[in-house]
Image (cartoon, rainbow over all chains, first blue to last red; front, side, top):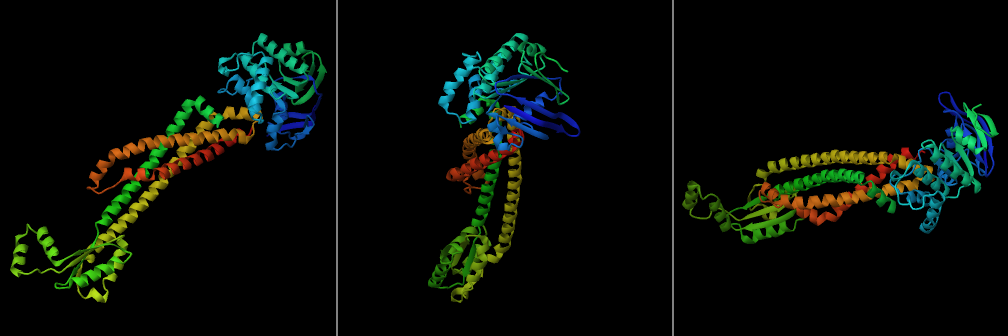
Length: 226
Length: 296
């Protein structure tokens, strides 16, 4: 469960990126977070992985109050949340398999477990046979699949995707969303930040609309900005 | 270690550039080491040529001169004492002045050997001569001494001592400047390397790597670069010092400078210390340079 209680994030001199946001996301939900540029979507995600700290309010992720999380604890939090980014954020000098294995290595997993798990995850995201390719040898859709595989390899309870289709064509975007839906069907909570109306309308899931740092709509259904 | 080697191998040009900078830095440091060895050799060569000749009065018994020799040889400040008999002293005197007919004729006129025995004393350092001179006032043989030519050399010794001090001070100052430049070069090259890896470091943080896990491969990479650079520098320096050895000997008028011998005799600590120092510098520099990219 993710719970935000009156969370605000202010930047000097007077920018309110988030303003008194209250949210509760139940385990297993798939939620789209929409809003115009500057609405506070990315700030919200950055708060969830402790890349930023709230100015006010409380954030609880999976029963862990991360509001005042200490720096040495941040890696442990991030190993429990799978993150997928618009620009993939793959390590350019590592192959697909190594990128995925890296997420396990940082958690101190054994080589044997890596050898077992990495091919399985590659198969789930449809990249079986492309394990030894470097990011520059793959298409945008394939790179995003590697990023999703890396996010999944820990079997996280929560997967957060920040504009995962932003750099992809319509067909590839739909494939990525189908993959995220499949992951959600297995019980993982998925938070999808997007401003792609087609995707949100197609999903027909819960949609949280942000505007000027505030939640202005929280409903199940289609994409709307007000 | 696997990450460090993989990282270096897959960023080969960055690795080559960094190692090259390290090698240039080490060559600079070794020029300084060589300069220091040459300076010391030059000073030692001049100091070795300084001696004091003690001329005993004509007719002084050999036993007294030998007693003086034994006494002086027992002093810790004395390096060597050479005994020259009156006959030998005359022989050397005529040999040195064989072109001067007037002097040779004067000796013939005298008919007998006008010279007494001599002791030629060398000391470990020029500073020791003052003590040795004092020791020569020993009443047992002091009265038999006709002349001590130390006073002739005194000015020269003082001059050499002054020059030696200034040269050492200059080399020390130069070492400081070179060391500072070398440190700045290494810091900058590591900063460039970290800047190149900044996105990678950020991604590592985002997938849950802790600072220690991120820092260690970069620190090990710095150690690998340092060791490789030291080996390359050694492979350049040892043949070069061997090649220039004859030229140095000729420059120092036949005196043994032994720059190559110095490196061969002390290679383990010269290059060991350089590899160690460079590694520490690289580790510290990478730790500081990486800091800003770890705040993700």
